[in-house]
Image 1 (cartoon, helix red, strand yellow):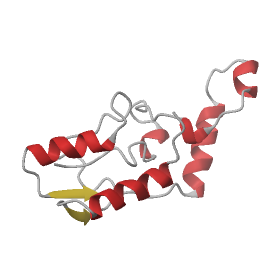
Image 2: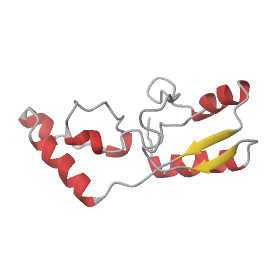
Image 3: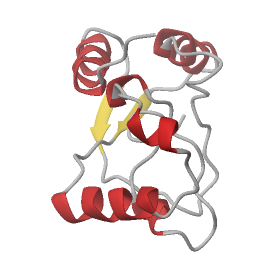
Image 4: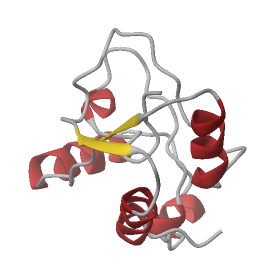
Length: 124
């Protein structure tokens, strides 16, 4: 699946603006440690399914948060990738990063600070 996160973000916001949901622009990561319902974007990439479930249980407000990677975070990610055990062929493979699916980082890893759930965290 070809996925441009910026396009998806705008599509979701537009969908929400034309729905019955109230949208609250939240800070990314501001709800850490609280009970959340997370969108399983890997197995069910259609955000409308997630919002339909929220509608069916009577949710009135959707918290929406996103942010862009900053240069130091990208540098840290590249440095951590450089430390990975990849073969010469794997390192030479061109990668379309817009199509990557975020995976959980190892505890204590610098990758944990990266917003891997940029568009996957919604609270119902």
